[in-house]
Image 1 (cartoon, rainbow, N blue to C red):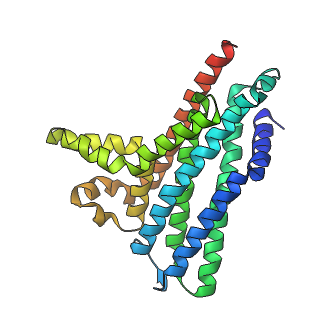
Image 2: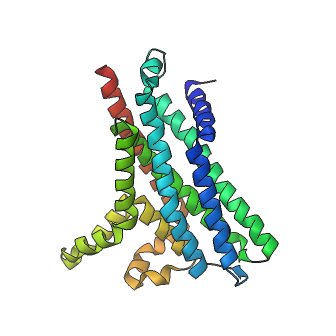
Image 3: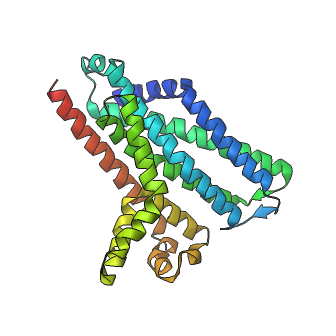
Length: 273
C-alpha cells in the first residue's frame, strides 16, 4: 500500500471511531427525515419551498461539519505528537495531506449518503418526498459542498496550533461564508461604481464555494428566475453543456489550491524543525 493509501485508511478508521462524526450523522439524518415528514405535498420536483429548505439545511450544517472534522484531524496530529513521530518515517507531506483528504472525504460522504438514504427510505414508505432527479441534484449539492469546505479545513488545520484555535477559525470562516455573506456582499457592492458591480459579483461568487455551489444547484433545479434577471443572465452558463464541467473544474482548482498552500506551510514548518 502506498503512503497516501496508508494515511487514507488510517484516517477512515479514526473518522469512523470519532463520536463527532456520528453526532453530525444523526443530526443531519434527523433533520432530513423531519423535513420529509413535514412535507405533505407528495413528490416535489425541481426548485420549490421544500427543496429550498433542504438546500438551506445542507448549506448551514455540512460546511461546519467538514470544517470541524478536517481541521481537528490535522491539529490532533500536532497536539498528540503524532506528526513528530511521522516525520521520522519516509512519509511525504503531500502524502499526508492528500491521504487525510481522501480518508476524510470518504467519512463525510458516508455521513451524507446515510442521511439521504434514510430520508429516501422514509419518503418511499410515506409516499412523499422528492422525485429522483431533484433528489440526485440535492445529493450532488451536498457532496460538492462537503468537498469544497474539506479543502478549506485542511488549510485551517495547517494554520491552527491546537483544536481550540481550529474551532475558533472554523466557526469564523463558517459564519463569514454562510451567515454574513449576503450582508457583506450587499455592503461591498453598494460602495462600488455601477460598471464594477458585475465583475465584482462574478469574482466574489467564485471565491465563496458555498455561494457558488448554492447558485449552481438553484439554477440546475430550475429556480434561476428567483435570482433576478441580471443575476440569472450571468448564471445562464450553468445550464449550458459546459456548466457542469466548469463547476467541477473550479472545485478541483479550489481544493488543489487549498492543499497546495497547506503543503507549502507544512514544508516550511518541517524545514524549521
